[in-house]
Amino acid sequence: MSWKPTSTVSEYQAVIDDFVVEIEGFDDHVEVRLRDVTGTTIDQFSDGDLVEEFYQDSWKKTLLAFVSKLDRKASGADQALDELISKLDDDEIPF
Image (cartoon, rainbow, N blue to C red; front, side, top):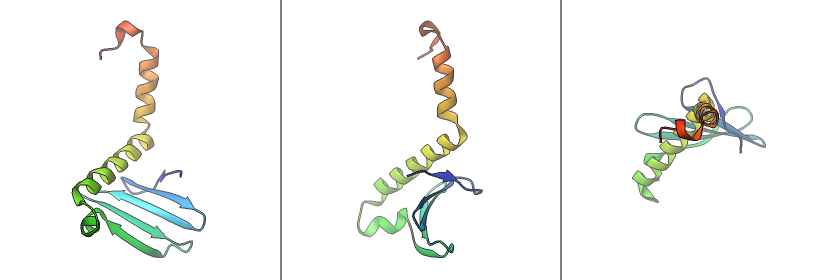
C-alpha cells in the first residue's frame, strides 16, 4: 500500500481499487476514513472508538507512531539521515 501526503498536515491517503483510505494524526488522537470514488465518506473512526473492542492506549500509540513514520517519510528525514550517515567515515559517526 502506497501512502501519499495530502494538503493537510499529518494526513495521508492510500488508494485501493475504488476506495481511498485516509489517516490523519493530531496531537492526541488519530482519525481514519474510508471514502468511495466520489469522495463520499463510507466509514470513519478514531483511536477513541476502538476502546470498546481493544485497549485504546495501545491503538492510540500504534496509530500515532504510524502517522509519525508517514510524516518522516514524506519529509524525507529518514532518507536524508541515511544518506548523511553513509557519507561519514566509521570514526566520524557520533553514536
